[in-house]
Length: 322
Image (cartoon, rainbow, N blue to C red):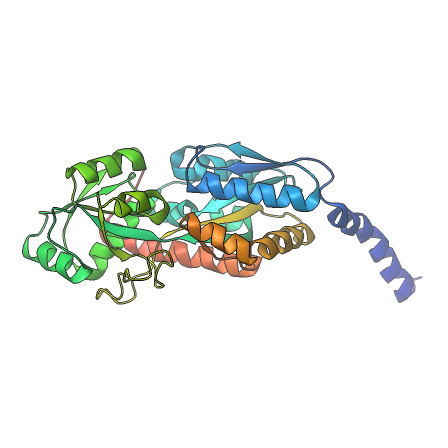
């Protein structure tokens, strides 16, 4: 004899209750928060901001755990392989948008193996030149680069890094040829640009703003479609004549795929509410970042679009890492 429909429904609700209760009570213990880059950089700054917000809102500790290496992939894979119970979270960054485009083999899939919580911020990059280079805007830079192919060199923080990929996109969209000089980090790259060893670079605004203000470097454009609020008179690369140019670094929060949706929603609600507060927006702008809080679904779609964009650029520039 079959059970009454109401009895079946009641049984289902009873079965689901422990899961709903767990999500409501979450977190009941400390949460590991993986930051896939070393201390001190933009990802570390944003990651610790996220842990502070979540710790204050929930009354539980969200503990930063810096796991740098392999362009952010070591920490991201640790997150992807962790139990999907809400007690391991991580930063998802622009590196996860670029890596599938340039690495021939990856041991995890950022789209399939990570759950998106929210995008936190976009970090515009400034296109800077050495003051001795006689250009004050993108059009003048293009004129020199087209007249003298491969005569200009640009710095990056390593193969496949955001500064490298932004310049590759610039080259792809304009047809210019320039020489890539990769460095092992932002500090040595900026030092050599200031000394004139290399002529230009894309670097996050937060990292080179002091050099621009001191006139050791000249900013000629910002990499995003929108102008950068602290430098309202600085045009975008698109305004300089490169139609559709839009790129930069970004930071978001993720979790292992399969983390209960109710937990993801709770984390999203806490972070988005705090990020959209006027005081937080001002704080982020001072750090060279723009608030980009969104829904888990919007962040997921954004990540897929980033991977598709950089895959096109990587193929055009024949960029790959074994």
